[in-house]
Image (cartoon, rainbow, N blue to C red):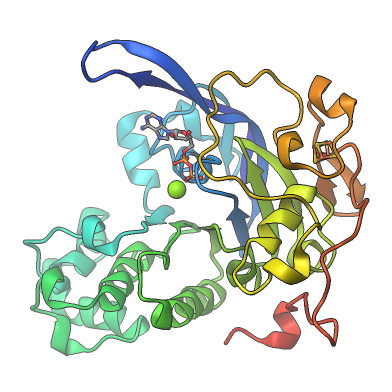
Length: 342
Ligand SMILES: Nc1ncnc2c1ncn2[C@@H]1O[C@H](COP(=O)(O)OP(=O)(O)O)[C@@H](O)[C@H]1O
Ligand code: SF4
Ligand SMILES: [Mg+2]
């Protein structure tokens, strides 16, 4: 069942000069995004820095107002909701941010922080604060020890666990997690990602997992969508996208993962960070670094079309050229079911 449906989402930011106090240009963050999120699934949204992942994640929850496009949650027009209705709907639509330090109030005790969503949505009486907070903290692997502490007294990983407990407190139908592990120490990223994946499965919620590391999130995702300069260029079942990426940009993202450079070189071109959006004249956004680019790629922008059942790609030459090399035993595709969710 489709839970959230986005059609033709667009968002352009004005670039303002701090000195001139006026717009000096614009940056197209979303350039007509169509995306469906199904109930109970994990969709990994990946792309290089500046591709529009954060803007898309926030637009889906109306934390950023899109300029144009449709947004339906359980068939209801989300963009038509008034502020009060939207605040009520927040119970179903939650977000986990990249920096757990910034998303928690430094003066608030952890117990209060975790209980707050239940208080706001009137899901539990104040008298139950401690017991409810303990229950929610236990779900993310924390004990009573942290209840009366402040955020600065916790480690980064513990803070992100608290942020996850807060996001899940109201039992939302959808959680958008924007790079939830990239601000954390490498050694604990796997733990926190697995915690999110486990809670997603147990609660049956839809999770939009935003990341730049395709392999890391691909491992726990049902589907993968790849964003390039505000457009989805590839989308499909996770195992299929990882095993047989059809878009040269997806191949380049896989090649950019440390340790894979040599093996995947030449598979799809290079990932270039921080490419200026201004002055973009159309055509395929990957063409400057695409080994398959032709003259047509500069003239026309490829549409996202189904290339194989359930696998959509926006490229004039999908799947052509040498695919990324696989590990010896063909383990390039990390199958979610056979791998489990360690
Ligand atoms: N508040 C903002 N004001 C101006 N430009 C913005 C703002 N937020 C995002 N952008 C621009 O929109 C584009 C997409 O940004 P973002 O959604 O943050 O990408 P990502 O999360 O993939 O790194 C970038 O070019 C960025 O500079
Ligand atoms: S449309 Fe052309 S430039 Fe773009 S990814 Fe495909 S082959 Fe490369
Ligand atoms: Mg971002």
